[in-house]
Image (cartoon, rainbow, N blue to C red; front, side, top):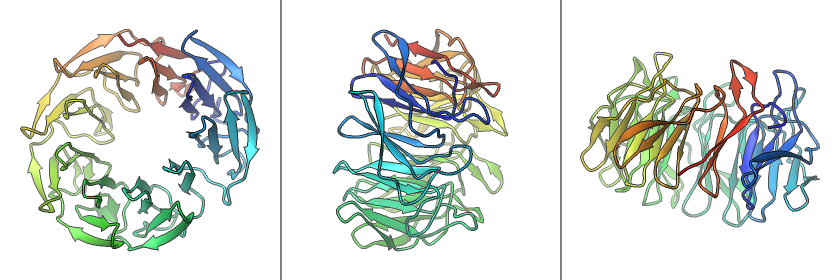
Length: 395
């Protein structure tokens, strides 16, 4: 890139180019610069600068091809200012300001093309951060839990795009943060675990048709910062996380028909903040993460048909703040926390090293482009921002 940056945003445009905006050049220098990457020429060019420097903002590709940037922090104050990037003219224009300045907010592109901004430091009925925002089958958005700066929240709210209004809905039975949310095949919403004072094993179901929460079967193990994946058979797989007694390698399954949890085989290694990738064959690949504050290189595969975990070849490096990208050929590219890169091949269940990056990177971005290649950009190396970018050419 022309300018070193981190905490930036990266958006793949409809023309295949990649727009990078804002971020920080160092701890105190905030950027309004934007630049474009052209995969056809493998070059970066400066494009029109945003009107306001910012980091911690969002950048969303709209249905008309423009990019909407909202909120963020400019080093002095939070921003409510929003602006639009038009790729046809490569120019920025300010658009209507949000009612509240925000950072750490969520953005959802609704089916009608409208944009829903929620949380951060802004206003729903209740300010919150660390919450979840889930698009329901009826098109509404359900926001759950989080933290308001003073206490954890059990309050849930619904956004209705047809009326552009927020309404409170039934409160969860427990305040939560670090929980998971899974949309079930029957349209109900499963919330599991998280922290509410102590880490909990409670789970509850939200029924959009009645707006009510009901306690459902408790997980066998308490956990937060875990991962949850809805499998092809409709069951929910929950893995790892931290509990009241520390890390766990346990995994369990929720059956929406019986509303009960059953243990499945444990992962081979305890981990939290791990990544998980749903593979084309329906298996789940778990890579890396933290174990007692140490980045681990271990990877394993869960087979829902047998309920078993298989340790695959370990990655060559322990990784955290890395990226895992499912390629168009079904392989998974893992990069970061070192300069090495490696591929997982589901057909052979093996890892092979591939060309190393030129830089050690963390907190970078990785985008699968329309031609199947992966663009890795920016990030930091030993807390020094990187301006370089690299292109992985997928075979």
